[in-house]
Each structure stands twice: as structure tokens, then as C-alpha cells.
Length: 423
Ligand code: AMP
Ligand code: GLY
Image (cartoon, rainbow, N blue to C red; front, side, top):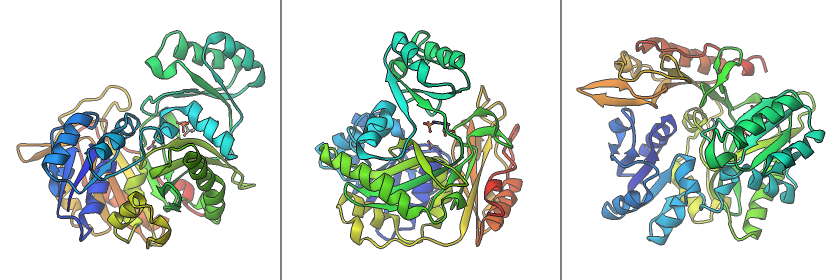
């Protein structure tokens, strides 16, 4: 079977890598892909958002399975379009992807389904925000729509809350995405990402993971797309069944009841109180996480195509799925200046050296090949994943891998996975 992976980041390279291990997969195409995917797949020069061109390509090449990485095409309804054309595709419909596409919708679903989540108000104009301000001192102010992970502002006073509301609504810093706002009670704790394969009825949890969103060590500096991740996250130890029963089951039931069953990967971002182990859902994503995927998929021992097929065919309750009981740690190497302005086109050295380390995998993100060289082509350039019997071995292997590669201005966090040590 021919497979098409849609997207161009480290997550998509990891998906291509895992799919390439399946005996069911003959050839992989990746649209648009990156320098790393071009080694195991044929890159196709079509943007992930160009749904019409992707449908045409998939029909032409008789693609047997289409796998979508990023949220934008999912929320725009790529799954509906592919299915209309008789194509087999893995991901939620546009209506189901609204769990990520609208933060207000996600809160309504959680409320109806009884999923633990922070108290909140949805506002659509500044006067409404003034009224609900009474309820909040510290809050997370969230643009309703997609903002490439940048639409949340943590506010420590009523003044800051109104400042954030004004930037979103008056200054329209996120355009239409900020026309509606969720103001949410501020929660403290430790975050974890719990992803599950879903077939509309059944959810099968993957190993949990933890992302590192800030640019600098010790969770300092501005937010990024994610500077590293590790799996499993010990903070969720012993909580898997409860998370399954109190988050995924009720959400799948609620979505099915509304006539929009959720199929694909559902990603719950959780805030967990380390002492009481009480938890709350901060957000849903309608896809694999990036860079969580680069730490999670190396621990999946069974065939990912079986899991994906079971989601599409609604047979997940019977699917066999096997996870390695070791750990994985992914360290992201970023371009100088990221997450602000950065340069592209730097030559990346050492990629061949690192291939000699059997416990290290390098997933490309912002890279491209030119003239037999691999060049930087984005802010997050590489994700170097170390695998180990436990988290400390995985961390050590990841940093051994990182030490083998270099490009001008390369920087990375030195503390990925540290929170898991000693737990
Ligand atoms: P979200 O995109 O909703 O996950 O928000 C991005 C980040 O903002 C999360 O990963 C948290 O670090 C933080 N955040 C979101 N909601 C809250 C909340 N209610 N309390 C504290 N932090 C939050
Ligand atoms: N790692 C966070 C995300 O994928 O949204």
C-alpha cells in the first residue's frame, strides 16, 4: 500500500519513520516533508493546507492510507474532503477537530461530558469581559481559534487580564481567532500530555509524555512550539485508567451523541496536582503532539498501521497494541534567535555520525536538502531522540546524539526530562 503523510515537521518525520517499519507499507509520500522525510519517503511539493491538491495527488497515486500531522488542515475539514472522494484517511472530521479548533467548544464539550476542567467564561466583547472580571484574579486568557500554540496568556491580575483581552479583541493580534475569548481559572501543578488512538467509540491511551514549552532551561523565557519531550511521564503513574474513564470515554460519548464521532488521535493536555493527583484538562488537540510524537512513537513496538486501521474501521477494542516499557527523550535543536526571528540555510554537520548510535534517532523538523547537504530551514531544526531502559539512560543517549550534530547558532535546552528523574 502507498501512504501519504501530510505535514513537514519532526512529528511527520517520526510518523514516516514508524510507518516505514510496517510490512503493509510499500511507498511513503510526504507533503511537503523536510530533509529527513526525503530519506524514507518521496517529498511532494504540496502545502499541508492545500486540500484540493492533496486530494488530487492521493487519487492519482492511488494512496491507500493518508495520515495528517498538523491541526490546520484537520480543522479545515481535510478528512471530510478525502472521504468524499473515497480516500482512506486517519484523523477527525472537521466537526470533531473543533475540539482543538475552538477552545470555547472544547470547554462546552467538557462541561456537558463532566470532564474535570478549570472554571471558565466565554466572552465575545470587552463589556462582557469587564463583567466576568469579578470572578477572576489570576487567569489564563485564551483566544478561541487556532493561533499556532501562541494564543494563551497567563495573567496574574485583573489589569493583566483586561490587557490581554484588549490585545486580542481591540488590537486583533490573532485576527478572527481572538474574536471570542475563553477566560479560565489559573491552575497550578505539573503538565502532562496524554494522547489516545480513538475510533469514535473506544480510546486506547499511548504512553504519556511531557513537553517543554519554554525556550530556556528551568522553564524560563518565552514559549516555543516545544523544545523537547520525554515519555512516559511519571506524573501520570497509576492514573491511566482514571484519565481514560474520566476524560476520553465521556468525550467520545459526548461527540458521538452529537453526531460527530471523534476518530483519530485525541491529545489531552492535563494539569496534575502532584500531591493529590487531581487533574484538570487544559486543552485538547486533534492530532499527534510535536515534539511528543518523537518520544512516544519510538516506544510503540507494534505496527502503527494496525492501530490506525483499527481507528478508521472502528475495531480499536480488539486491536493488539504493544508498548516498550523503556523510555525515550527528545531534545530539540533550534536555530539562533528562535522563537523570535532566526536565519535559515545553515549547513548541518554530523548527521552521518549520529546514525552509528543505535539508541539515537534524529527526526528532522526545519531542514531541507540542497546540493547533497542538509540545511536549516526553520526555527526548530532537529529533534534528537534517545531511547533507554529508563528515563536517565534515554536522556543520556539523547544528549550524546545532540553532541554529534552542529550548525551555526544551534541551541537546545540542557534539562529535557529532568523533572522525571528521581520519581
Ligand atoms: P493551551 O494551549 O490551552 O494548552 O495553553 C498553553 C499553555 O498555557 C499550557 O500548556 C499551560 O502551560 C498554560 N495554561 C493553559 N491553561 C491554563 C490554566 N488554566 N492554568 C494555568 N496554566 C494554563
Ligand atoms: N507539543 C504541543 C503540541 O503539539 O501542541
